[in-house]
Image (cartoon, rainbow, N blue to C red; front, side, top):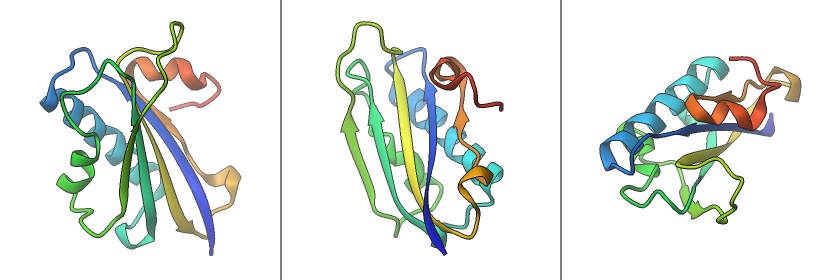
Length: 120
């Protein structure tokens, strides 16, 4: 097995705890489905959010999915004037047999501009 990184991002319209958690849960669910992720294959999840989001920790969504044994880490993106606003990103480190080319990265809502080469 190899360790592979799976990337994803989403945006919210409001700095609201329930919306942040709901959108991140939607993102994680899409990553699970696209990559057939099993909880025991997850090495760790790293979340980042833009400075304009502080109403909730994105990692709460992973706990709601039952990922209670998965190491989670959260950080803040730099404040960049041209960056995507109200954005949460995730990097999942997985143990998998899939090749790098087989990994499907997911970008939802306003985050699709981050990787226009990735088809959803």
